[in-house]
Length: 192
Image (tube, rainbow, N blue to C red):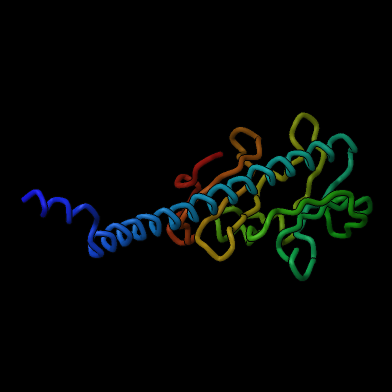
């Protein structure tokens, strides 16, 4: 009996394979969760940065007392759908004839700007047709309606920047697994 215990001092190959397979399954689940967490963090960060940029454009419009126009830059290649451009309209004051870039912002890949209709029920898209930032006495220069939608790559992870008319402030929002067809308002989104 003493001799038999001495021979069984190690692990069998089956025991090692079971432990390794369990560790493989657990790590695969962890990697999938980590990838989702990275996507969520990056799209949230893009929304917060875009909201700060929009507020800066509104403040700049008020400081300069001129109409500023916001749009996705007509870029190709790696910056396509990732760069916001701010131009001024000193002729018509409605962004119908904007000239002269004064500022821009680029979000990190794979985030990209998409149509606001993908995110929610907003009438104006600040990136497809120009978002018009007009100075108004006592109010923010931000357009009263509309917003910007950001998508993380080709996933169903979205964030949005929109004007909340109730509080007269630009707010960043976030939602996962949004297909645009289930919501008639912003109630299912989380403000950041």
